Length: 397
Image (tube, rainbow, N blue to C red; front, top):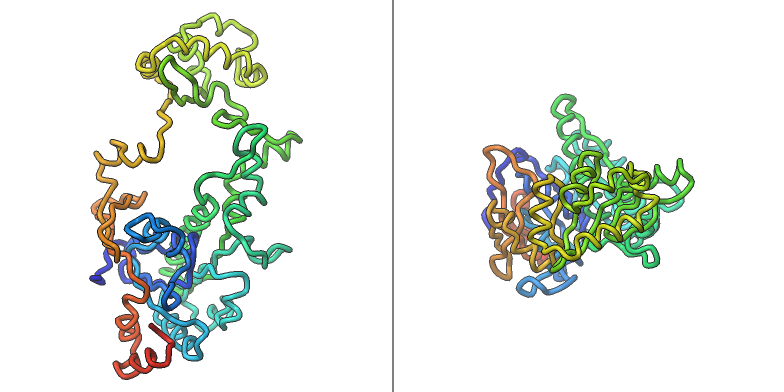
């Protein structure tokens, strides 16, 4: 692996005591922007996310997604010599990111408050399940559990069949917020010379995502109804059958409703119908309106429905399978797939969702467990003899 980070964060070193999804996504965002991310892994198995599946040339799809652009140091965190190694690396880093289990970072001797005192320029990012403080602080947390605890499951699925979101939305949210908070702290450090402790959690990320239904429930006294592909308060919204397929569409303004009724459904009389005069009325009379919409579109070929939607300037899309999405022309035509080297072979990966003018995407290799152990230790000031001794003692692999 060529260690040549580039991008706006080139020169920033991040030490990652991370596992699973939220922490690794946070540091991958920083690595994508040019930071040198040193990932501490267990000797042998490494980050347990390496074992989630074997879909990508025998490697975990999760791990390949989350860990490009990083260097791996295989370290036995329970070994007596491990603390000195981590301490030295922290002293040479700009950022520490950790999402270990509840209380683990304190038990290892690296409590954020102590590090903040001993390394005043260090930015310390902690990602947890439920956040610091409160009665749930030390609960173990996984995405499914947090989706349940924050009401996400209560808003998802059909009325009689709640469902979780199909991706790890809590982990993703916490990873993004963690990276954003870290960037803010690094920016502030330029002026003050001082680091900060920044925190986020799956609970807080999903609480933010639940802003609309939480406010709706708090002030109306009733939760938005689960509506499947429909919307709890906006009608028409969702999947509607045509003669030979279906379209997803969203009608959210008075102008769009008028165009939808006249052009798409060719039912101008709906505009004078008191049941459909505004968004609250359409929500109350959802069943009759949606039955009328499907009656009007069910005999029309999908291609003609799409033509009418385009003419009326109504937002719409297809409902693709994942196997269809990976062949999406919007990905291929814009070069959103780029190769990344992994121990199992070259893998096409989706590039970061951040495009910076004049800065190519950093798509450097994904490391094997401990692939850069000796390189990182040498940079930290260990001699070849000391490195050999650490291997012999089992402290590193």
